[in-house]
Amino acid sequence: DTGVSQDPRHKITKRGQNVTFRCDPISEHNRLYWYRQTLGQGPEFLTYFQNEAQLEKSRLLSDRFSAERPKGSFSTLEIQRTEQGDSAMYLCASSTLTGGLNTEAFFGQGTRLTVV
Amino acid sequence: AQKITQTQPGMFVQEKEAVTLDCTYDTSDQSYGLFWYKQPSSGEMIFLIYQGSYDEQNATEGRYSLNFQKARKSANLVISASQLGDSAMYFCAMREGHWSGAGSYQLTFGKGTKLSVIP
Image 1 (tube, rainbow over the protein chains, first blue to last red):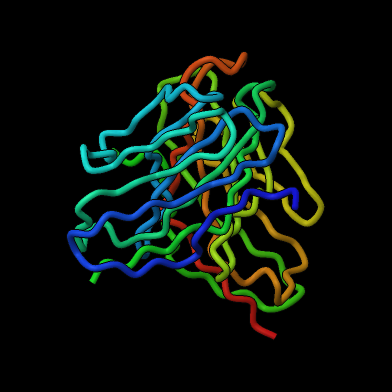
Image 2: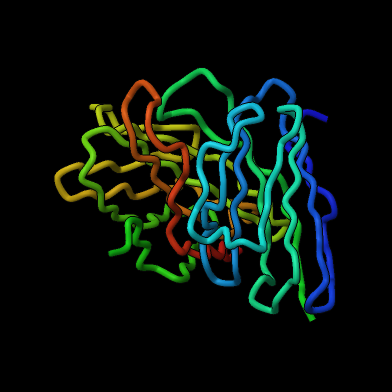
């Protein structure tokens, strides 16, 4: 499989529970991004890793959110004490380290979170 | 202010006809890149085409072309010979920064346009 893989594809959780999503980027890609997409909106940037270093965090990433990429390969996104407003599609993307502005990001199919 | 504006929530096009999806952007950077992505109902964002701010020619990729008007800050996507499989959400996005790649790598997306191709 040469694409970005996300697991699970769907997650239903009760409000207040913790959830964790996993993203496996394309193997030679050093850059990894997390985005959140709510219904009727475009994806919104959450955070960016270059190898294992988290270099950018959006103000959307509240204290309840934490992302890691411990070995510079796969990444996890954890949401603690979920709220109904966290219901969204969480998209992971990766891109190569070389290249400039035209470096395209390849997206996974996303994890759809529903908080009930 | 919105950085990426897509004014068409939905568009219909007859199969085999051409369609233009509008996108305007707002940035004070001299170096930036503009992207179009397609999102089918499966959810995956599929890269279609890229235009750099310093590119003098409009980008083309198969049936996709980008009508780049820098002075008007518009980057419209033109799909020629529409096919039923083109029915999807289409998102315009921008990356701001230096040509070398320095700066933020995040993409800022518009709200999208839902394209429906009619047989």
